[in-house]
Length: 255
Length: 244
Image 1 (tube, helix red, strand yellow):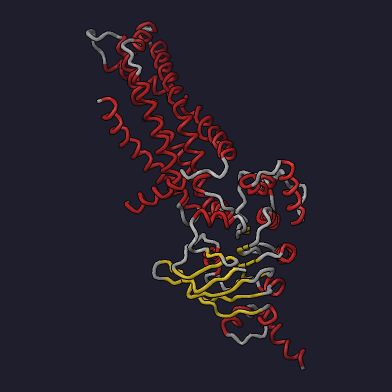
Image 2 (image 1 turned 120 degrees about the vertical axis):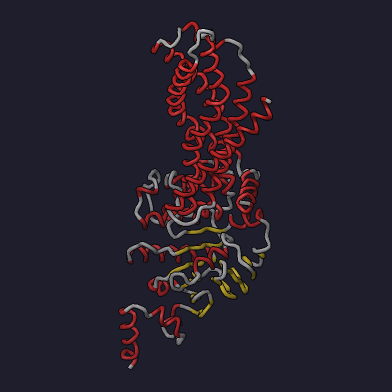
């Protein structure tokens, strides 16, 4: 479980996170949603310490992350996996070398054991026979899956996914969403996903937090999203014509 | 400027923290020796041979006097190459080649979040990315300097005999005449210091880049410019300290 308490973050005169408090639950896919520029990525990067917050507290299963030393943060990060927006695979390394990288750095397992673990993780994300390929030779969806394999190779307790579906077609996006959800439940980890994709919200949003201009505006489940009377949330959720038509159909179905 | 210097010191503090795994860092250092060192041999040889030739010819045309023995041309070419060209000029050339390579590589990793990915794995990204480059350059650049010295003097000899500026015997006698071995020590000390400047300054500009491809290009240019200025400044200081 990750608890965020009253965090503030400003860049110059611009307040990007304004008194955000939220609890991300273990064994669930927790979604942070909001428009582009609303502060989602800053919130996620603040939680993992890639951006320093101005004030507030962040607890990972009770451990105070903000006041940890750099060394302690590095230790805690070994329990985290992160899927970046652009996958962030190392260009000069093959798929296998990318996934095995954290194991090479932090474990003393034999090479055979490491390769076995790498192959298991790649198989888990439905990728096989790609070990020798370089990231430039992969499609966008494959890159994301390799990044997920790299994120889970050390059995993390916390998984962070920043816009996992950006740049993917709807069908591939569903595959990635399902994968994230399955892994969360299978390993009982705390997963936080940043997204503005409503398909993802309706697929895997067990807990949804809506950020609007740096403020936590709403929280609930994916089922609550469609029936909320929060104006800002409704503007976001029902922004497209398709979503508006679905909303307009709902009362008729009820009658 | 003070802010930049402060951030540079903080970065260096992180770079020289204890590595997570020595074996991985050693492997990376070997890779960087190939990338930054071995791949620079070609350009060092080409530039050194031509500059050695030009130094010899220019010295010959500036010493048109029957009072001056011709072997002094060999001596002048040798000392110019040993004292200044093979350390400082090659240092400036490497600041352009290696410095821009380091700044753009690290800058690209920054804007594509690869550095964030390293941090998220619990790895000290500054140390992992920069320390092997530094060690590789500080270890291998002295070899490049020695290669440059040998090839530069050889280039002068070729120019002397091909153009007939002076005889082979005069040039070889001049190259051997009044040789001071400390000049080589002086050149190698400068080379090691330049290697540190080139790698650390370029890495600094790459590591803290923000934005996109344009900013990476700017960081690369800044890395080269500031490395070059610092090399020239250090040249003056070390020359005063070691030769005065």
